[in-house]
Image 1 (cartoon, rainbow, N blue to C red):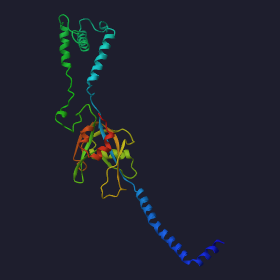
Image 2 (image 1 turned 45 degrees about the vertical axis):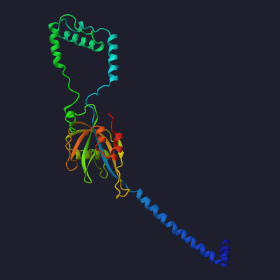
Image 3 (image 1 turned 90 degrees about the horizontal axis):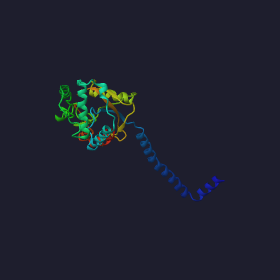
Image 4 (image 1 turned 60 degrees about the vertical axis):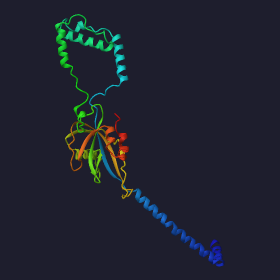
Length: 290
């Protein structure tokens, strides 16, 4: 019944039927570019980025940091309370009377009293015995404290591992990229079927040599960095760098000159002055503030 109605209407108005046919063809042609655009977008999404692994090699602090004025005052106050409330030490039971060890203990105890409460506490009363003189001479030779500032700090030696003993240091390499010197962490490419932490260890050894005893903390990366792509490169072909944290136990860097021209052990603040802005914004949260 419907087909008869359509045929009869076409017989009456053939021009309207022709216009309907043209409209259908035009709509079909207009859909074709949209489908092609969707296919191009899908092909771009399926493109895989180029994977790299980087190592944030850390030298932990080797000395305790210098306490602040508030911390010094707090520790001194606690020491005074402790010495005021503690029971006297029965040194007669442990040391023979008149022995050098007893004299040494008495000298140290007077120094602790003077340090906690100040003069006149801990001052010498009476004449000094021969044993006490001998003990003081022995203690004077033993009390040479090592300086907290290393020679590498005074000479600005950025390659020495003993510099900035109170701070965390990180290894940076200087490489040539696009004809300019660039500072970055050690990194390398990932081969097909290779685990990321294996690639990180291989890249570290390839760029820094095998003269170090290092330890990668975990198999899981601590961060990821997306380097900015050049203008003439397709946006789908991006580089991705997965960073792993590692510690150095012994040894020193011997960089491969084909990969790196120089190296330095730097603090977080010193790293900021050497790397690019985009690189710094990508890695700053992976580093220790102190």
